[in-house]
Image (tube, rainbow, N blue to C red; front, top):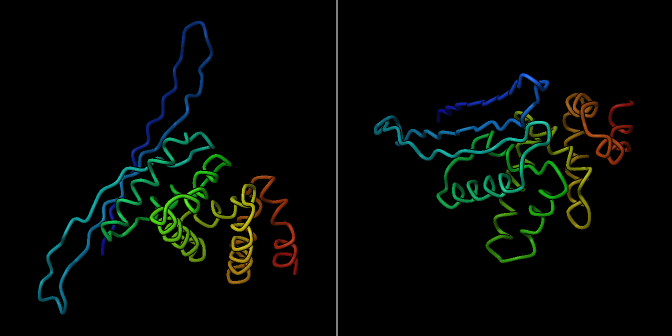
Length: 195
């Protein structure tokens, strides 16, 4: 299986004659293209293009909730087709603020279909965080600022397991977490990183 990831970054800075340059929020559109070789024992080595999706990644906290919902919808579509989900797409569905987390966790309270979607997505996120793929561990760890209720119990158990399994990476990631996440993960950090 080959993965081709094309990253398109659009960065606009506008300079007005009378005004200083203003930073405009940047959205990076990431296309994950899934390629899979079919066949056994190299008898049938056809390459089949599985799917292409566009996801909006969070850059410096300026992703809109509608973009996050769109990312969830696109990943759902891939899951419905039994397609392989690319790493960038998984990163794009990790909530990065309380509004995104509320939407994400609300999936558990609506339909059975949404509950199943939540379970699949959450499993993918935790798996990638445990495997330390891309920025998944950092983004997943930053959920500590927003998690609560039932989700928090499983979340902290997963973070502890990840920290114990990959202490060096967890300790490195910890310094770059939000202040709220650091505060909520301080006990785990002290247990794992201060040995």
